[in-house]
Structure formats: C-alpha cells, structure tokens
Length: 157
Length: 157
Length: 157
Length: 157
Image (cartoon, rainbow over the protein chains, first blue to last red):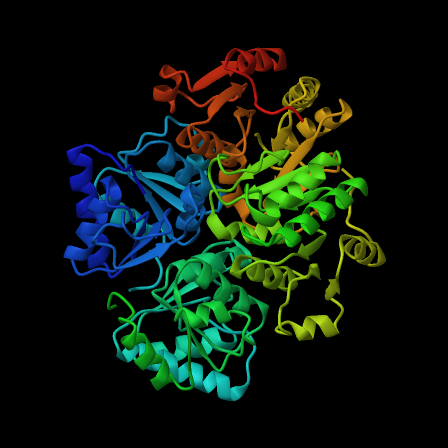
C-alpha cells in the first residue's frame, strides 16, 4: 500500500519490492490504480513474472495500472481499503497520505501484520509496535526477510 | 454464479464449465465459497490448470473452496455480489436462489452481459433478453460459444 | 423500494404509501435519489411529517431527493442495496427494474419480509411466497395492513 | 467517532458533546455500537432529545446502543467507516484506536473537516492541519464553536 503520488526514490523501491515479491512466488495485491506506489509495485511484480491483483475503487478499469493482472472492480471508493487489508497476509506500507494511513489502521484493526518501508507513522500505532504487529524495514530485502521471519505471505501464485 | 446448493447434474455442468473456461485461458471469478456451484466450477477450473478468483462474503477464508487460487475477503456479506458482477466481463448464471437472482439483476444494471445455463428467470428480465443482454445456453460448450460470439471474456490469465 | 422511473399511477401510490408510513409513526428508508418511486415515497412521507432516511449510492448528496431528511452517503453504487434491505424491518417493493429485483432477492436472502405492491415477480420467488416471506398488496392501505398483520415495522420515529 | 473502549473522563465528554449536538438541532451520526464513545455520545444526544443515526458494522442490531434512534445495518465491518465519514458534515474524533484513526484519515481523504477532541494524532496529518482541515478543541463547547465557525453542521434534525 502507498500513495498515488510519491518521490522517485520511493517509486523505485516499490518497483523493486514488487519484483522481489514476485520472485518469491507470492501474489501482489494492491489498490490497482495507474499511479504512484500502486503502479510502481505492480510494474515490478509483472516484469518479474508475478501475478498482480488490483482492488480498484472504481466501477470501471479505465484507471487501472496496465500491470495489474486481475482488476477487481469494487465501485466502492475508499471502502475498498477494508478489502485490501483483509485479503492480504501481510500489509507493506510505503510512503503515502491519508489513504495509506487508513489502510495501516484498518490492517491493525483486522489483526494483519504491517511492515512499514520508509513510512513514518510518528509512533501513533506504538501499542501495535510493542506487540510486534507493526514492524519496520528499510529496503525491499528487509521487507522480504521480515515477512519470512513472521511465517511468510501465504499461498504461492 | 449459482447456488450454494444445487442438484448433482447442475454441479457436474458447473464443473465442466469451469474446466472449459480455464482451457480458454480465461480467469474464473465466483463467490468463492466451498459450496454448490461455486465449489464445483472452481474445482473444474483448477483441475484444468486455470486461475480462480473467489470474492468471499466473509472476513476470513475458512469457508473458501480449496480450489480458489486467490481468495478476496470482503467482509461485506451479499454486498459483495456487486463486486462479483462489476469485475466480470460476462456473467454466467447457473441454477440458484435469491443470491443468484440478485447477481443477474445487478449484472444487468451494471451493463454486463448475462448468459443463463439452466437458470429459469421466468421472463422477469425480458426487456434485457430483447436487447440481447441476456442470453441462454444449454451446455458449457454453448456458454463458451456465446461468450466468444459476444466478443470474448477479456484478459487471459 | 422501486424504480428510478415509474408510471404516474405508480408514483401516486408510492407517494400515498410514504404518507401512510409516516402517519403510522414509522421511518421510511429508501434509496434516496431524486427520481421515481424513491422521490415520490419520500415526498409523501415528508409532507405527512415523517422521517425519511435515504441510502444513496453516491458519495455526494447532489442527487438526493429534497424530501430525504437524512441522506446516508455510501459511495458504493448498488452495493448499497444490501444496506437498504438489512436496515429495514419490512421491504415494500413497488414497480421497478433490475435494481428493485436485486433488492427483493437480497431482502429474501437476508430473511426480511417483502410485500409487493403492483410489482410482478413472475413467480420467480414462489418458494418464499409459499413460506409467507413474500406477500402482495394492491394498495397502500393493504400494505399497511399486511405490515401490521406481520408484527409491525419496528421502532417508531 | 471514537473508541469502543475509553477512559471515564473521555466518555463523560462524549456524552456532553452528544447533548450539545442535539441542543443545536443537529443530527448525531456515529458507529452505533453499544460501547465506548459511540454509546456515550448517543446517550447524551438522546437524553437531550436529539436524533441519533448509528451506522453499524453488523448485519443485525443486537450490538446497537439502545440510544441509537435509527440503526443502519451495513453488514460490512469496518468498510462502513467510509460511510460514516462521507455522511457527516463535520467529523469529531474523540480518543480511540486504529478504527478511529482510520476514520480521521478517510474523512480527510474525502475532504471532510475533522475536529479532534483530546485525540492525539502526533502530527501525522500536519499537512491537513496547515490547510485548516484538521482542528483541535478541548471541550464540547469548543467543538460546537469550531463547527459554527466553519459554517455549521448541515441540516437540522
């Protein structure tokens, strides 16, 4: 998860993370739009031969990233953030705005593990950090290692 | 789409339809539960090497068919029927109860083509039949032919 | 519940039904749009001093009927039909198209009583008619009598 | 909006805020459950003669506060947080956990004004504070004054 707009360095790391997820044989699920972190991670995963599920807020696929393998059209706007986090084994949060913060919060509420990669939550979720539900990793490699240390990311694609 | 409970002959046709969809290289999307038409079509598609997306009403995967490749957990009950129909290029309705009827109705409202395989809608949607939005096919072969005649079922898996 | 477009006689009966519901002290809940049966029933209820909840498909109130007291903005399109039926004690279906049929179907799935006023469902739900879940009434008076015979419509406004 | 569990002082302030909202003739909309800030604010509003809309995550009303006038059953879990914020003119956030944080975030994403009463967001939304979308108030009186200064809270009940 991450912003529809992001700095070039964040996009590059998201792309690399997508590629690393694909190489593990895991499915990448994100918000599906052709913008920012979503588009970059989808591109990385697809270029590495992976499967990308995009849970779109729209009722059409016009704004889907071309790198999304399967666009799921919810027509529900940001209510789809709940589906995003429920459907993931692990949520990785990249830099983003209120949409991304809502996804971190909803993921913790749903009992999903969250890994922050360069996303600063200012300690607002410190209770979850103390409980080991919220972790940090600085690099795509670090994210993959953290996912594996926590038991993996579920079914292979 | 189709009922969580169905006659053996309907289940067998659903399984065969799933297999035929997979052999075309299309993605099967259904309601994902381990019951009735959903489970039978998922099984057919997976046994034929296909990809199955299950849009579950639940917030957990305990009731997902083991033949669903990617369970999408909506936690929204039957509100997820709207996602089912929006996300499909063509909706095939097998025998079912009010859930299936709601999906046919929502699909027509969303402008999706609907093909009925042994599902009797008593002419309630006759305006859509006249407009060519609602068709009938007696067999999995007939369904596949109708989908192709109408322009196919979108992206290959 | 009923169509966004309807014949003048259906609109007049919907307006009268809204007024009758309000005079019973019941809350009218409908789809909230400024069109067809929704607008007519809302107008009737408000002119009789009632409370009208409109569950809108939109994420804004621009298309809400001015007679809706409380617009609930779902931003979920027709997924909101599930909320409509869950939130009602009794669903009254007036003439309408696939949206209305989806609501009847979802209501029966949710275990809600449904009363049809001039809405012909062609016997597609006959199992529910036999079980007493689906009834018919020809007039607003008949609808009110059926609701009362079945135990009323819940909390007073 | 606020937590399902909260300190006695926060509950007392929420109750008072509910009463103040009702006395202004505004409608109180919250998450509807019989717990924490939701229950306290609903109680305050109802005891002051106000109207309370509860947007419940459940598909039944068993866990609704008895002080909710109109329970809206969404059956959508935390996806209903999106409806909560869309349907409000102004969102007041009381102390709470990730559910409340998700509502603040979604409200800002939807362009709704947010007023924090004793809820510390650690500056995570500072861009919105700078833009005047996110404000703070220490007391129910302060909240009401801030709402009025910003143009009020929409339709009277």
